[in-house]
Each structure stands twice: as structure tokens, then as C-alpha cells.
Length: 281
Image (tube, rainbow, N blue to C red; front, side, top):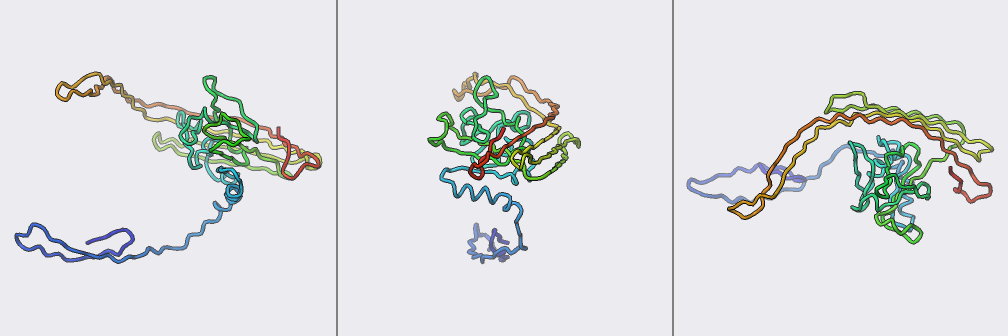
């Protein structure tokens, strides 16, 4: 029986003569397409449609994650949402995303801004920003530029990450998001995430207020293996250095990570300003 992906399987009888060492058989397979049921994808494309159009129309090469895309993904913080873009690698601490590396460069070579305003560094040893402190639920979108332009700071060698804050819609809006999770390694069923949001506009639709509350708790436990070895010994037969294991350590690390926070976001539409311009605090 001869089979290959994309071709029709053939069964060909082969006779091997007595005393023969090998038999050559030439077989030509016929192409056969795989026909399945119709698949319709609408919600995911619709949620990212505005971001895709923005990427195509902008003169700068960038990647954009829309708010709809952020809400439909189970991300705990902004770092995990950014890590879904191409060319971006997530750096984790205790199983949770904390920083991102753009184009293979360390996070300290990136700049992080909120609506164009640069964030201060959170690490005293270098100038990287811990993105795990920012909840993805307060964001209206994320824009990543992988190459600096004349209007950007010159120290953004890796790229720039711009976090866009949400603007309050007209009228009262209440949103509640509750999710649960299961950790198979520890057989733990207590993982949860709870987010509540209330928003409205006041003063003739000029002042917008968004109040957000979030709480989550996850089991980040893991089995860790530690090996200590040296390569100082030289094999007398080969003359090459060979590794020598000094210690071997296998341990179970129990870690629970929880987050409890809230935010109050105010935005003010400036009178007689061009459409889309407003002041955020």
C-alpha cells in the first residue's frame, strides 16, 4: 500500500522472485483533493477588521491589536496580548508574562507609551517597563512599531509599544466578565478571573468616566529541574573537555499569584477640537 498526503492511496501487488535481492516498482499516484464541510469565520475577522485596515492605510509599518480582539482572548495583562503579534516574544516570570522582546532585542531596548505619552521605567536596574501591571481590560487597542521614525525617541532600538486607553461611550454601560480555569498538573480547579466595568458620559457628553474593578488568582506551580555541571575534565583518549555532573535537583514549586485592583479613567472632549481628539487623564 502506497499513500501520500493529497494523493489517492494505491494498493499494488509485488512479486519477489526467489533469490532476488531487490525489486524495483514504479508507481504513479493520482492527485486527490480533500473536500470538507463549509467553514464560516465571521466574529474574529470582524473584531480585527478595523486594526487590519489601520495597518494597511498607515505609512508606518506597525501591528495593531483591536479592543474586540483583546476582549475575546483570555489574557491576564497587556504583555500577553502584545505577545500574540508577529515578531514579539513573551518573557515570563513564574508562568506569567511580564515583558516582551521585539525583533529579538531585550525589553530595555523598547519604549512603552500610553496614548503617546511615555511610561517611566519600573525596574531600577534597567529601563524596562513591567507590562504585567497593566490590565488588558482598560485598553482600547495596542499598537506596536518595530522600527523607529523621526517623530519617536531615538533610544527605541527594538521598537515602540503604544497602549491606547478606552473612551467612555454615551449612556450608562455595565460589563461583567467572569472566567474559571483548571490546572492539570496540580489538579487545581480554583483559577478565576473577575472584571467589572461601569461607564457613562457627563457634562453634555464632554466628560467620560470609566470605573473598572478586577480580581484574579491562578495556580502557577511547576516542577523544576536543576542540574549543576562543569566542563573542566579532559578525556585523555580524545583530548576534549567533557561535562561532569556535580548535582541534580528535582523539586516541586508551589506558587499562587493573585491580583486585586481598580482604575478610574477620565476623558474629556475638547470643545471645537477636530474629531477624535480628546484629553485623557
